[in-house]
Length: 372
Image (cartoon, rainbow, N blue to C red; front, side, top):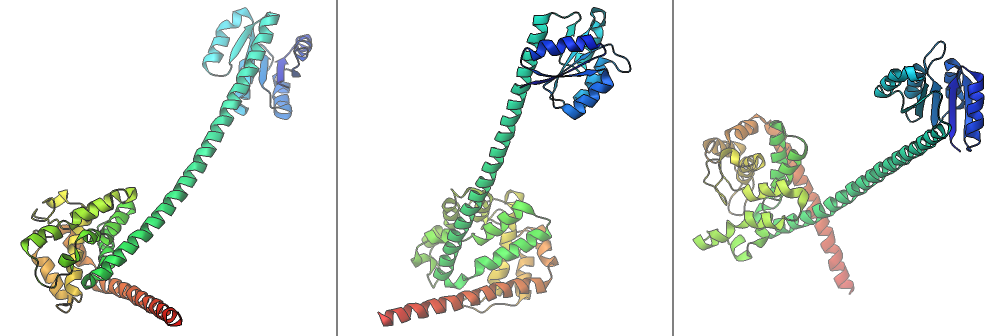
């Protein structure tokens, strides 16, 4: 049942209003004057419609309905005015204090119609508000589900990529664990350059995945012990593009795969596959170029032992401005050597744990074969 509040300073008017609207199946509360009206509104509310006379002692109906609006903006507010107070009613409508006004003496049928229409509008607004809240709640729920699904997809994709990287590492033994070291070095230099957020993650992932395209290079070329022929180099130099295509449908790696594509570019434009130069090369790829050289020189390879840091740093300094971005080189030079050594130790520790795990797996497989 809809609830109405009528406020007037004449008791016989309130009595007539009560009889009229109770006969129309409304619940009616009346208040003699604005102060009593505010008390009734506070204690007996909420009301779908609040109707007030304009001219009352102590407070006008417009002022009273403004107070009502502040307390409950959803309640429909109707002002009863004399003909000569028409301008006052229009001003109150313009200020948003009232929704409708009726002139005294009012038309009985019109008054009932206005109140019923106001109640319908009230319920329509309430229904719209509830639907809006429900839609917002559902959207938030869907967003949470989508985030959860996206995290799950990322976790599974990352596991798959980790497997591919591990397969590549074990296939190309001379660069084993190289991807993990350069990813950590690159992340540290990027931090030194003030990079954060998603871009930092892109640089780390792109560096980690930089050689993923070598999966598409035949063993006869990838694992060839001697120098490559000109034709073999053509195939080898395709690996950035192979990696870029391999990651095409992994949407959250879109920026990272650009680093995969550009990781063999040079600052002077003499790299491949696109011959990009300077700032046309992504910052992540420019950072990678420095850390890749540093790690290659300071790591053991089958055909040579690792060289000291000084040798790597001298080579990087020599190629600054040609192969390497000078700003990236300066950031690299600011890093404490102990930090870089710590990164290498951390990766070596992971490698040791992985080797132990593989050893145990091989023992279990061998034991099962013996029992079989």
